[in-house]
Length: 288
Length: 288
Image: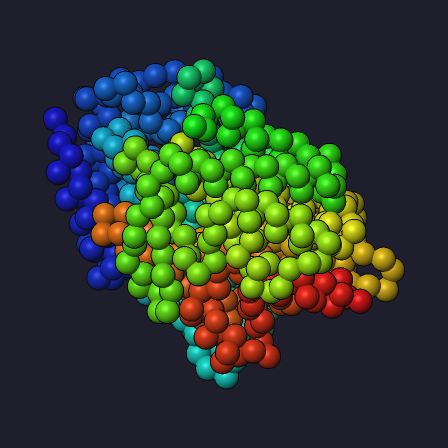
């Protein structure tokens, strides 16, 4: 039986390990430790509830405890077997998983702690977002072998101005750096990702930083009706992408149907794909 | 004794009149009617409370009812005499007020309804913001003699995409149009204003739309301590202004101390001034 303090300690351990060294095995271990206790908690202390999916071709469920229903869970990607997940996390580190296994493992490790955190405190929106940032930051840092910075130094009015950004990876000479905004969902705030990209383009020249946006999903649960919808604004994204700045790649853990269609129709303008494909194209992401 | 339904009806009347015709006398009348009942309510049903101002050279008070303390009120600009305000609103329409009178009248008419709304429902953040948008939209529409639109049509991928913006005023030929973002305070969301400006610049050419940002204040009340601070991010603003897009003018109803300093130090880059000065420079704002 998980208690709130144990969950909090495990979550704090993730943040601490990432802050100390984003690339480290300690960070990876803290992440899988948290995911495992979250999965055990979901399995033993929570009830699974069915949801009605209004997203074409997708099935969603969730978990309930003390009358609180957590965010939607895509059945196709979620695995509740914590032993398999813990084993796959280790096997992944040595390159021993196929694409489908990577997809399910990443989705589960990203989501399980968020579900557990909100079942303990439904008003805590910040901790799930922070955990997701930690996980994605760690995976990029480890894959690229580069420690990220969390702010840019911009030349403004003859001096340097520091500006907080999600992650910046400074690669070797001659290779483009990477600007990595990370969002659990992009509602409302996503213009910031493109704006930061534009600031970097203006300050350092287009192409100095490749924009790589990582998002989890765009699902929204109507708790009363038990219905799941995906909130998408494809026209806005096209406008940002063509008139504000260019995101070289956009990765989703659970790609929304309408953004998949956007890429199908405007693939030369905007490239949206499943997160797990990052691991088969690390070299081009790193500009290698 | 004001009741919640009366306040709601009066607020709805403002929205309805503005939607019907932003320039209309009906809109102006609905605004001053709401401001007057709000001022009467503050005067008769609420207690005035002193606050500790941490903003240099400013004094703040507020109003309290049933244990709820409303947002901070700058003593230098607020007038609680509703008869003077109602009279000044009429005199303003015929150009019969000096700068100081305009400043106090505008500040009071903008703020009083927001105070009343939050004293009835402290969780309602949307209605004060909507009212403020209505008031500023009406004043610009009436002053310029132009009905605004609330969205831009942007050329994207060979077709037109509609994008919601606060206000766009399409002026006569040869004059720059006006892009008017309106924010009660700019915390968190202000990057949107500069981003929209950049979208317009990219789509129609720099200078096609003059960016004019109107904000009320940046005060934040620590209710427990009764302290008022101003939340400002001058370095971010300079970065947006030089690397993202250019706001031609930025108006405040209660200019934050640090943004005043920003203009004092970087006046050629960023022009931040009291809202009432708009009325003495309508011609240049309209590009005339």
